[in-house]
Image (cartoon, rainbow, N blue to C red; front, side, top):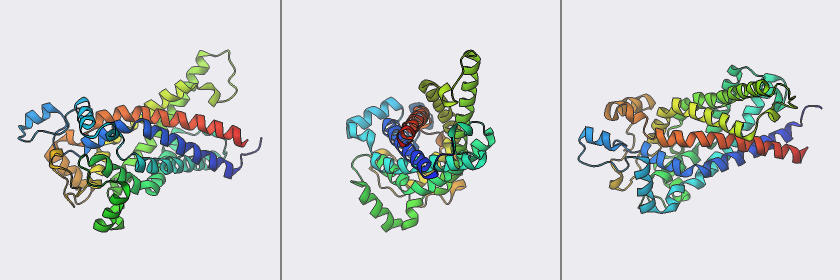
Amino acid sequence: MGEPNNVKRAIVDASAGAISGGISRTVTSPLDVIKIRFQVQLEPTSSRASLRKQLYVPSKYTGIVQASKDIFREEGIKGFWRGNVPALLMVMPYTAIQFTVLHKLKTFASGSSKTENHIHLSPYLSYVSGALAGCAATVGSYPFDLLRTILASQGEPKVYPNMRSAFLDIVRTRGLQGLYAGLSPTLVEIIPYAGLQFGTYDTFKRWTMAWNRYRYSNTSLSSIEDGLSSFQLFICGLAAGTCAKLVCHPLDVVKKRFQIEGLQRHPRYGARVEHRAYRNMLDAMQRILLLEGWAGLYKGIVPSTIKAAPAGAVTFVAYELTSDWLESILA
């Protein structure tokens, strides 16, 4: 067979990426909302830490279960999907761009646009391709990420009733550059995050295929992808998402602080992050370390890890299955 048509391949990658990203984001939205509430809270996110610091004002959220109960009581079930519309508008083009650029880079590196040939790339090229694809996707979809964070963190009463009012107010008060607040730590974060996620995913896939060959040595595999079940792809994606999130979480906390600068939330949510509270990324990390300790840089790590694992797994499995389905339709 000859090389697949480039336009068809781009349509498959973009569509599969957008669908898989949308499914993953919607499924894991409740954990994402809880994670964001922890990350933007300046007070400790555990009751023990609050007691050690002898705070006179109790922390709003002190654990996943307590936060879930509070959000449900104050905002209803819809509170767990706050900001999901801009999240979908962000993640669908993000994932589409990411997988499209990733496939182009792997095609360039391997000399073939066939997906089954990409598995033979060295781990280093997989990491680099993933990092570059992540950067391209971040720049292309960042304003929606910022709007999602603001809407998900505002609580009740709402500061902004919808995405449009948030967008107009940010442009009016901060200018167009306000839509890219926190982009620097995001790009610094996304390079190792996307690199680790895609690099470790390919590595885990290779290990799993090697295990399959060892386990079913008498069975001839018709293709590389046929040698992996949906469950195995799920486990590979889960492991890749977990590894990437654990390494890069502090930069995600810094990004969220920049994104909500100046947001006038209700006082019951604790101290606010004032406008221009941090000069730059390094200053933000130093201030968080000074005022909140190392735990401050890992606020939200538990819901983030719980969310990242299934999110990565669902994204990769949905992408693989959707890609195969679209290829069969367009064949």
